[in-house]
Image 1 (spheres, rainbow, N blue to C red):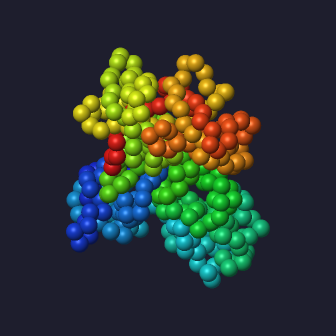
Image 2 (image 1 turned 90 degrees about the horizontal axis):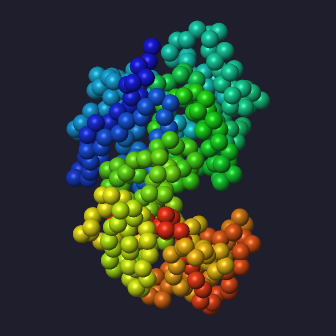
Image 3 (image 1 turned 135 degrees about the vertical axis):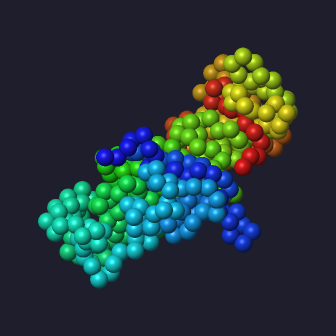
Length: 363
């Protein structure tokens, strides 16, 4: 019986070095039963290295990796009971779809009738029944990726690792498979550690996201928390888009912070209690929270800016503006709003609880 109190995988102060390059710098992370955790960060931030440590293709230089409470240094790769899905599907070209899915069961010497039952169920779940007897060269990229996911789940792994599994697909296929992965993971409860560069994908799939940079986990939290309550400029700009406004000074009150923008305008904002009063700070507002013109209410903080461009994007229109000191400001408005035309000087506003004072720079 699985101990639900023991993490599916735990990295404890793990470091990894390559010829003077620090791939991982004292990283700690756990993934619990049923949880979907995504590693999100730029190339070289250590995401795939964490997966490699779990699967056993490399060893840590210091620290411990545990799978179900067991130190992986005492476990051979095939003993770890891990399912793995790569960007390159790595399907066997000489095996049919059904045979590819069955392979992990065959090498585990599962009984033939049990293999047939599990493969049939997997084919039905992944909507691959019609492709069961086709070869990888005879199916689409989206179907091939579904085969790879099915193969990784068919033997009921203790942990599923996914390394940029949708990176080679076009936008429409990615969206469909994101939905499939989310549904399957929620239904199966298999704890999953997922690597991606795609911010929207991370937000859609994850229970928690680990933002990685320079071999460290900069911050770990639920998607809404990281998006709406970033602690630094880097966090705000890496996960989503953000307006960053220069600040000349600020003071903390009981519930919020009073901020003087560099252009002299006073505004009210939120800030983490841990924000360093002696460090450099900036004001962050997401574009979708910026109002222009007639949608501004009397209780909003506001600034004046000049419209420089308007781009229609279907469900929204992006309005680019410039404040008096040259600071850019972007507003994402509903398509029926009429903010003005390029060259107009307009009022821009936002609700105080939608703006946050954050550490300048960061990561």
